[in-house]
Amino acid sequence: MRVTIPPVQNRPYGESTAVAVETDVLAGGRGSEIKKVLLAGIAEAKTRIWCGYPYWGDSDLSAALVAAKKRGVDVRVLVPRSNDTPAFEKLNKIVLRDLLENGVAVRWWVKNFAHIKYAVVDSMTLVGSSNADRSCFEYNQELDLATPDPVATEAFVKQVPAADWAISQDVQAGDLAFSWKERPEAALINLLDRYL
Image (tube, rainbow, N blue to C red; front, side, top):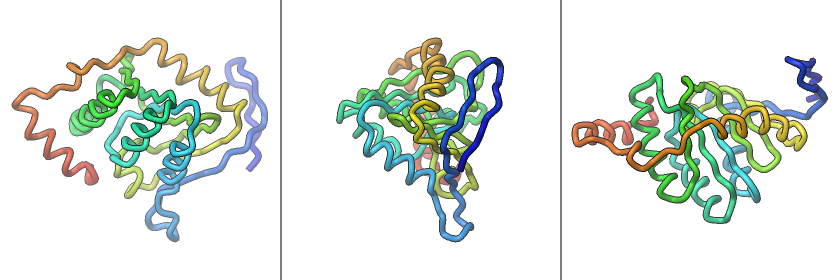
């Protein structure tokens, strides 16, 4: 697919190859192309995996990120500090605690609620409607665009992930703790995350 994008706010434009990937369990067996593309990219990543999602919860994705970190890949996760869904605020804490304990760099976006969803894996960019949770990977109808174009990816990295990372705050282990009152609810949410 060839797309020409006109200049936006004095940014250069060009041509890039992109492919639409989706999650749609009712659409002729396509299932979760998004998750397959993302996990395949992470498994092959050599240099970096930078992700920004407001909602986390997929254990396969978390395990893949930890495995990549152990291979020496620069793995970064950016999450909004405030969340518009209380259940996901708790679920995010569970997932982020595991990532942080395994050496993944995790930062809070603190300016406002960040609804952007992206993953940069080496020279591939995946951006679209999907979050990093089981509902988006298994049940919802979602659409992302993936481009393996290194020029487009570097332009995106400079404009969004690198710029946002520079003004975000490190997540501390204490940020992810639950009070004794919150623990039962958090445990239940973790068990039921596929239904959120």
